Image (cartoon, rainbow, N blue to C red; front, side, top):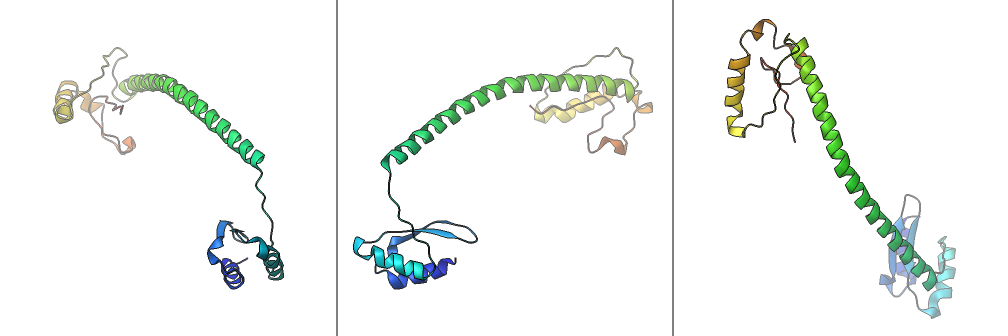
Length: 175
């Protein structure tokens, strides 16, 4: 059914043209609500059926409305409880996942140190949080301190896939 055919029918038949409102529409059908006076209901139903429109009367059931409202309130309360539970679970899980991620970074540090740089298994690892303005200076100091003699074992290859390469093992962790 075309919305334009309904509008033209409604404008021709009804004297009060603002009584029709579109409720829902898809590719084939449209659902309208029409408010009419009692004296023209039968004539409207007949004319609508003659123009291939389906007419159904709506009666308000107060008990059904109250049941729907109660069901909606229960669902909203259930959603709120589940959201709170999910929030707590996410907070707990985040700490566990972050700890596991730091452990994976430590394993990666150990493997990179031995395989890429050829360091002996005994070495010192540390975590640093430099200020943004001093990061470049710190990287220079680390390169001068730990980069001596590493050039024979270390090369800046295309295998790094966009990672920054330094003459020492370095992993950046965004917190």
